[in-house]
Image (cartoon, rainbow, N blue to C red; front, side, top):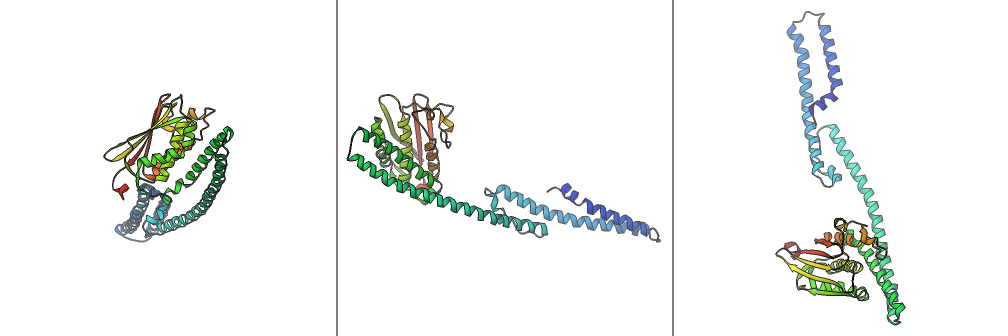
Length: 337
């Protein structure tokens, strides 16, 4: 708040006071009053007035500067009304009252939409759990009636099952903290769990798995981490090439973390697209190939869930040569708690 801007708002009052003092001086000309008294009256009034507006200016400047400082420091701007101090002038009190009312109204509207979102999420989760039952039943029927036709149907059911699981984890991705538990886990067991979940797609696509140096302990949620690895495995299979297809799992332990590497010799990712692979809905040139049919959700979901679990995920690739996904499991007091 600048003094010049404040005085500009007072220009009409200053003009009226000046006019009133000039009028008084004109009337005093009729009387035989010493010049000293004539000067004392307007000067004293002006001094008192300007002292008053300077006090008002300093008081308002302190308040509004504090409001702006709080606003700049807050990540959640809507909490401004909660942190500003009470003012000792009427405009400041009105401002705080208005902010409190708007904040209250906003929270009411947010709660309405939050409830609607929760209802929708609950419905999606319920629907996914219900749809898994006929999928499992269909797979049992296929198991008892094996043929080339039922084998193809079984592969399609696996895809449906993977997509429904992806939808379930996507629905829960904003509330991971309600459904995970960070525990001490064997990295090898987590990888084995992900491989077993994808054994059909690996076998049908004749993809070989190589496991090396996975005897490490990591702190994570095995269910969520296994889902992340499943998405990566499915991507590796989808974009594999050649007759001898291989996915390698290996790890390295450092002082502050354990890094899991998932490497394939597939079609790779173009250098210009590597920075966007975690963007929601991004499919890239590989995903637009007719036989790949990518949704652009898998890696986006992996990134989001890794952030929720306190993990880091990186991808390096060379087009038509390889792709390496790194998942970093941190060590320290946080994970050991």
